[in-house]
Length: 103
Image (cartoon, rainbow, N blue to C red; front, side, top):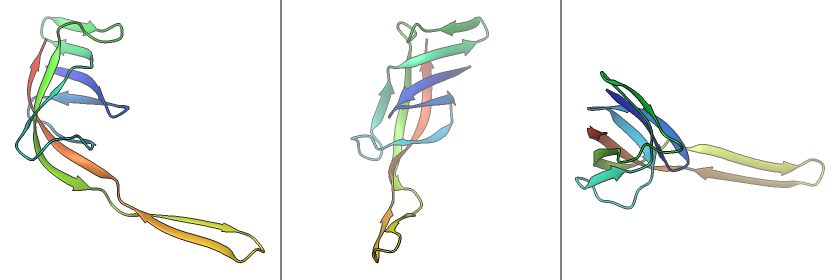
């Protein structure tokens, strides 16, 4: 059984036991997390496709920890103007373990 959920403007295909990194959620490590925007649920009985979400479907998870992604370098410059700007950025993520898919 698997489901497609939407969170943080992105879509994820998840199964029970999966560990995924989603855009930072407002929770602490060990808290339970619920995803209500379930776009698709596939099981032995068949596939349910939502319009746009599957009614009554919910994916439960547990926040494992808050992490930050790899550093990217943002470098801007204007040619012949001696104008340069260098910045670094690390995107915050929440590591979530999927515990149950309720459809």
